[in-house]
Image (cartoon, rainbow, N blue to C red; front, side):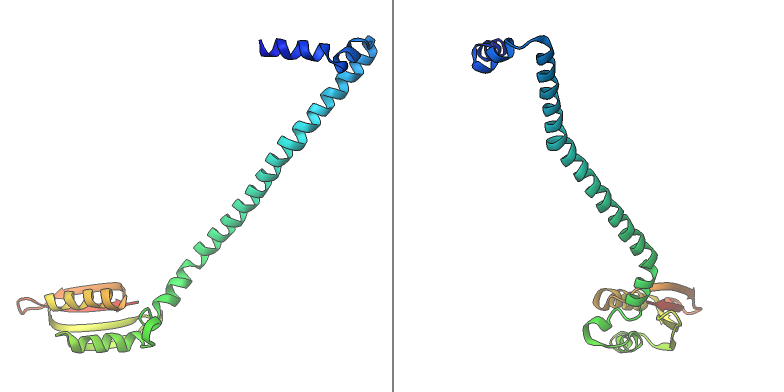
Amino acid sequence: MIFETFVSDLNSSSAGRWYAALDSRDTTIVQLVAGSLILLVLIVFIWMPVSGWSNSEVQRYRKSLALHEWIQSNEQRARQISGLNPAAQGNGESLLALISRSTKSSAITLLRFQEEGSGGVSVVLQEQVFNDIIVWLDKLEKQNRIQIKQLSIDAHPSPGKVNARIIFI
């Protein structure tokens, strides 16, 4: 109904009367020009913006992918750098000094401790109470963000006591 009204209004207008008065060759030319204009509008207002958006999203994806690959390739190095001294970020104290100081507030006695080549600290405990070691390790992690890279615990002949070797990062 709306379409029929539109067509009748178009035919009764001056443009409709002009079009109806054209011969068949001229109407074909007008139809080709109108079709070309419609195609041009579709290309300019629909295809080009979508294509431009698509190209920009492809470039954004490639940049994100390159960044992701770079992060993955440098992840271990970043972990090593940040693991060299996680507590030093706050007060500048070395990992070795932090571990040594923390044993004084705990019931832990270090038999031997030394820096590792990877930036960590190796600690050897002998004949220590197992529960005290666990509490000390938990305190180191929660208060100082010191992580354990490797932990080896062996039973000692005395009940409740153990020997341990720990590598911190």
